[in-house]
Image (cartoon, rainbow, N blue to C red; front, top):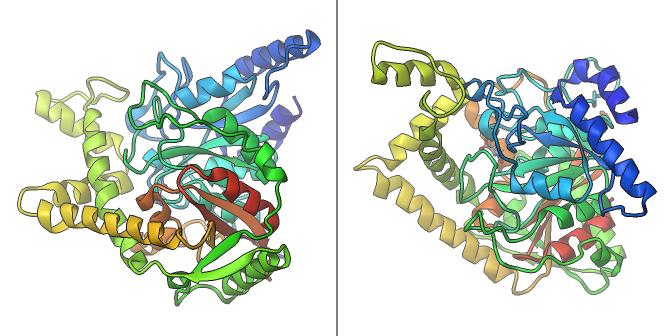
Length: 450
Ligand code: GLN
């Protein structure tokens, strides 16, 4: 009830929750109370959570914040959310996001922008919470819920976490089932969580991970107790600092914070090593070929016949065209155009195939670097939260993901931890990158920063 009251008091300003599932929340909470009373509490008994709108939730609107899915109420539950309910968590409602998770500011949402609860010192200007999981990050930062589900295709968990002073974790590709998650780019999409502390992330992550026969890309790998792994020290841990991450254009404050982070690890007894990722500068351009290519294919299913919106036309083709023209927003259309272009005959080899080869090189860079280190430490973003409507140029917006995208290209786990504030009082995050399926070490290292 305390969280529902916080939502009632503050959500109108922030637009983080796009739907509060009041009855469901109260019914689930009551069941939790009863179980606790009987001494049958499950691991997340009664923990109130917010759910990013791209997770399908049974009989609850699930639209990925797109008009094309307006009114869609799936008759099934995503595996990730089902696991949370099976563990006793309570659903408060659905959270704002960029349309189909395409964006870095939550401004492409068909439900309107979400506002970051943070403001620069003495300033009234409204800032973005980052994206695409902007609603998840803002809701956790504003104390509307104890944690939130999120998804990360190129940075959508870590970047908003960094911009709102919260913790965001994207596990290894294959750790969580993608079943029941609205697809953006299937070879990159991965579920994860945003919370207030590393420990909370470890607890929630433990509950949502695991093999699912309904998703052939989910891995049959045991899930360790991430929470228990937090107790070990980082003495002797080898922390890599990739030199290619020292980019021109990064804010001086971010550079200084990164240096501080390195010091914290040194003080904790870790060994710092410089490593090299020679192909890192190709990650973002290759991502913006592969992700739109997969998106254009995934989004072909929205044709006015099977889901959500339908705009009638003179004939079938006309109906398709009107439905898609009205249903998709500008950024989604841009991605479909790019994706269709790079997949078309004559351009496939030059763009898509080439980008796939670059992806392999990036993965190999990480494999080589991880021969010498256990985790890597980098900034999460080049700078702090920016103003709503401030970034109009799509390429400028895409540059926000420069530090997070390589991790998705390589399928690795990534974590953003709040590390400090700018002089103007805005949060900045540092990113830890782990070996495949070694989220435990990454989370343990994350505690050094918080
Ligand atoms: N901002 C990136 C994009 O727009 C990544 C989004 C995401 O991770 N879903 O594609």
